[in-house]
Amino acid sequence: MDIKRTKIVDIFDPNLIGQKVCVKGWVRTRRGNKNVQFVALNDGSTIKNIQIVIDLSKFDEETLKPITTGSSLHVEGMLVASQGKGQTSEIQAETIEIYGTADTESYPLQKKGHTLEFLREKAHLRPRTNTFGAVLRVRSALAFAIHKFFNERGFFYLHTPLITASDCEGAGAMFQVTTLNLNELPIDEATGKVDYTQDFFGKQTSLTVSGQLEGELGATALGAIYTFGPTFRAENSNTPRHLAEFWMIEPEVAFNDITDNMDLAEAFVKYCIKYALDNCRDDIEFLSQMYDKELITRLNFVLENSFVRLPYTEGIKILQESGKKFEFPVSWGIDLQSEHERYLVEQHFKRPVILTDYPKEIKAFYMKLNDDGKTVRAMDVLFPNIGEIIGGSEREENYDKLMQRIEELHIPMKDMWWYLDTRRFGTVPHSGFGLGFERLVLFVTGMTNIRDVIPFPRTPKNAEF
Ligand code: ATP
Ligand code: MN
Image 1 (spheres, rainbow, N blue to C red):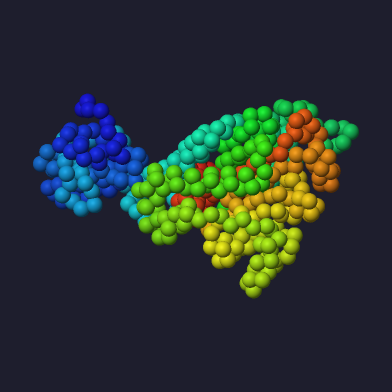
Image 2 (tube, helix red, strand yellow):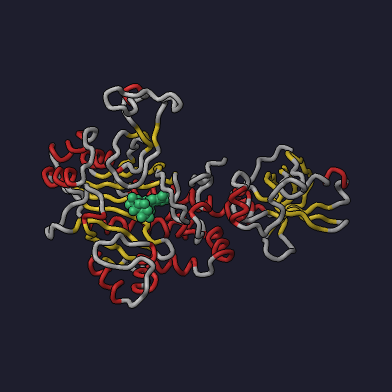
């Protein structure tokens, strides 16, 4: 037993046929008769299993007994062309070492046909299923594509802090970070409130909801940066599109206006989708076959068509004139609900839509005010099946206008002096956006619940594993 291990993803190379090989992995299935047994072995490197053929005249039954679904093996033998259909080659076992057994009574992933809900309860083992193996490989490839895209375009990867003292973003409720003893909080006599000067950082802190504000500091120094890291939102909405902990990519570019920003967003998502199609074909085909026959057509469709670019005001008009009865009524000034976004994308235009120039009241304080005084240079990218996948804007670079918005909104700016300094010293036009990584993975895999595209989802009342 001393041959070098070949990963199963590499074992189907026709040049290996006729050679002695070594594979290691987990048993997916075992079947056969009293002369010969067939074991499907998977090592996670590919959706494909390698078939191990065990001639029972060469092995005694007692040693083979523990080879059940979920057990782990080290197999050596001759790689031969396969007689069976559906596979090109198989291994005729010469030696088999059993690393670990998996009791058939208690191992939860027997054969197939588990619901995604059941597998969520088994998130510690579900990566061993075809579905989650495929999703996690696609997720990994997409993460790589993201770095590749920005690297090829001269962006710098900026690490923004996860713990923050600014609570002005308004993007979502924040998780507080503290080392104070919650059972014995120090109270400030004068105010009767918690005395955070005694807390670890000497002030109230939280987990970040976005790296954008620090991203702007990077962009106004390095020119073009992106962040790619975890983001935390205590959203108490149990939807198939929201996680409490998700990963976000936030490019920020000096001298880009809203049009440059839209061009970047469109090129970026298309690049990622194409990368996945080119590099994860087996996995995407599997997912398509299992869950969504239209998946590959839809991915190609997005690649081949340019995104519609439409001002919010015109979007509202289309919704009002649609004659459709929405659960949330439509009028100028409303924040669009998922049903509205999906109507525009899936029924009206039938392709991705970038909606721009939203009313300032429903968008963040830092977005650049248009000349009409009512709308801001925001841009949301809306996708079929997903709704909002990207939110971004051109930023207000004018110090006075930015301060005016901050005052109108009573944003606590005492800890934000550093952000304002970007507008005080060498301010420049700049733009950026945030892409929710899991929403991209949802789109590319065709999965429908965001809990199924992150290994260990964090949602209200759920932080298991
Ligand atoms: P939504 O309206 O869907 O809650 P948002 O307007 O709060 O999104 P932004 O603050 O603009 O979103 O964040 C940028 C991107 O991050 C969104 O376009 C989306 O892709 C993603 N995102 C936002 N909140 C979540 C979440 N709770 N879970 C996963 N992804 C999210
Ligand atoms: Mn939100």
